[in-house]
Length: 191
Image (cartoon, rainbow, N blue to C red):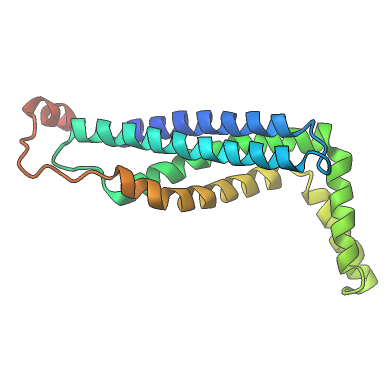
């Protein structure tokens, strides 16, 4: 499997996983956090379970394609981890765009209220001028699209790495040492 098809498959997988996570995020939005805590937990667990199942399925598909195209190379553990992290990178971009839209247009007051509640904890720890600067920076950063998207990508890549460890070990395939390279495949690669 060449790099172009690897990244294309990661893009497809990440887009589908990102849309699934956005869908579950949209389902949890109308629920009140205090009275519906159980439903929010169930939806979050279902969303991440579906994400793991989808990552397993996409990684198996890429491993099977890789084995079909180049049986003498196999599909290593590291390629599986790389595929899953690349897929979660694209899912992180989609989740970052979703979070930016939600934070800036639909739940802006809730986000700023959360910052206010958190900054109360630091009020006595910092001098007044430093606290005012930190408070203003915190309020700006939680609504900044670049900050939200980058933090979403980093978070999803880290989660993808944790998911990738067991999934990649289940989907790795050993190389077939006795397979012959197909002459037409090697000729087309050289051209």
